Length: 257
Image 1 (tube, rainbow, N blue to C red):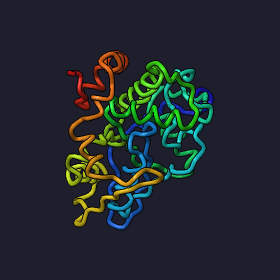
Image 2 (cartoon, helix red, strand yellow; image 1 turned 90 degrees about the vertical axis):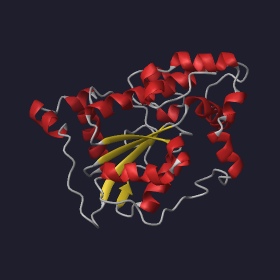
Image 3 (cartoon, rainbow, N blue to C red; image 1 turned 180 degrees about the horizontal axis):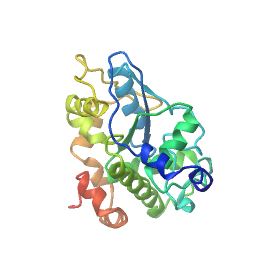
């Protein structure tokens, strides 16, 4: 962010970019923020965290969508692709320290951890299409909406770059991992938080927000990738072509169909 960056000296940037995790003590509140595209399981992930890690406080649940502390904030530079006017913003960030400093300013406290949820782009597209249709996002109901996938790609490409800059502060978690092995999913989050152990009794919410109750049929839909049958071969090829190879490879998303 240009005006904000001008206030940062090299010494301040260096200090903010230190990746040493702070010591976490039992009973100490851990301030964290959560990010992800709409329909990428942000609500579910938030509930998993707050119900299983009582010391963690998620700070960004009800802020304006145009601000960097909102969970769906579009932090990439190509603002013209932003799908809805509620998310329009002119903030740009050269690196993670400048973004973190701005989030701290908005949150009015020091955020320790940044958690980002990601979902298989194929299942995500179908879910996001319904979300966009319901909320009146600019879209074409007769052809493939490639701008949705470009939005997805830019969003996660920026977060992947931030994760490389600050691996001790940024964690990207897969929705599918929570479905496949929730215990391991929570264990990885606990390790990221610097905790010695995972919850003894795991709480897995079956319904969050305005979504329908999670059923065995829905689990089968994801575990067996039945959503792939709902996309044409052409649609799948478009999705693959618009998403960075690094994202597909790193998170093991299917390129063979």
